[in-house]
Amino acid sequence: MSDESDALERVIDEVVAPGAAEVDATGKFPREAIGALGRAGVLGLTTSAEVGGGGQGLRAAADVIERLAGACGSTAMVTLMHYAAVAAIDHHGPEDVRRRIAAGEYLATLAFSEVGSRSHFWAPLGTATAADRGGDVRLDGRKSWVTAAGEADGYVWSSRALAADGPMTLWLVPASSTGLRQPAPFDGLGLRGNASTPVTADGVTVARTAMIGADGGGLDLALAEILPFFLVLSAAFSVGLMEATVAETTRHLASTRLEHLDQSLAEQPLVRADHARMRLTTDQAAALLADTLSALESGRDDAMLRVLEVKAAAGEAAIDVTDLAMKVCGGAAFRKELGIERRFRDARAARVMAPTTDALLDFVGRAINGLPLL
Image 1 (cartoon, rainbow, N blue to C red):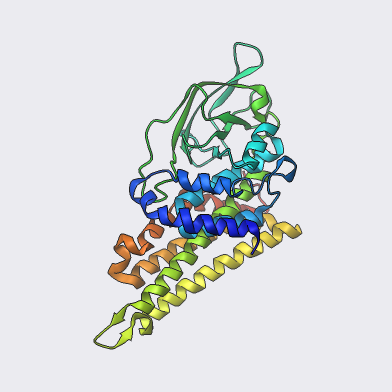
Image 2: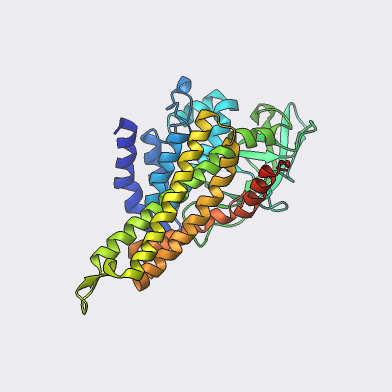
């Protein structure tokens, strides 16, 4: 096991896993876990070595998210969105921010989906206009959901183009910017500690140098650099959640007995069949994730198709596996201490996080029929 892997395992064992139940129960942002991940070099894992980062790619990030998701879904999702944002910042962002990310001192996130266009992240309604003074830019918009809102240090923010013809421009907006507002705290079904709330920009002023990439080129950048990270890491999240659910179910079935038969639950044929379905579904999703990573690394012709498939497939698989776990473990699964009902709730987020499962199915259908995605 590498030093980085050892460090991650220590953080999971000592901070992330012990705090998961409280994060879920209270909706508390996992600040202790995120801080520990930063100090362990995990937040800087994918940042370029030239600025002091780990210089690792998508496969290493997927391993981190899978392992975190097995311990605490909220911590895993915050880290996932950080990596997705860093995919753009590391190529196009300012060096000082990149160095802070590499040092584990800066948490980033995405601010894409908007109130008016909802999960259609490719159609921002928020605007960017020239400010009254100098070369500054005014941003106005209403984001419907931003993970780590009020907790991250900076948002990769989408708007309509400033002056170009393209559909979208991206900006790196400091979370401390005057004019950013959160209407309400997050109190959700699952991922309760991920601080995912609406964020409104009302006359937020940034320098033109805050632009990430070219004016009007934000959609191309998002599709080429951010979306692969988000979709693949979302699949890794689902796989990690499924693995933890299967493991917890296995322990429960082995340790719980039907005393009148002198048998464990694992010895019951119907229970075993559902347990086997859980294992099979998990393995299928994990195999697709591994194949997607291989396709990207080798430049296979079907790499982008796999990227479009993998979040939808793994997300739906996680819903099926956690649903079966609730059935297989019976009344015990409804209690908080087993951890299955928490994962049951967390699994449902993937279906509605943009791009949603339905949107991805449409993308896949378009791709296999030779039609444009948008």
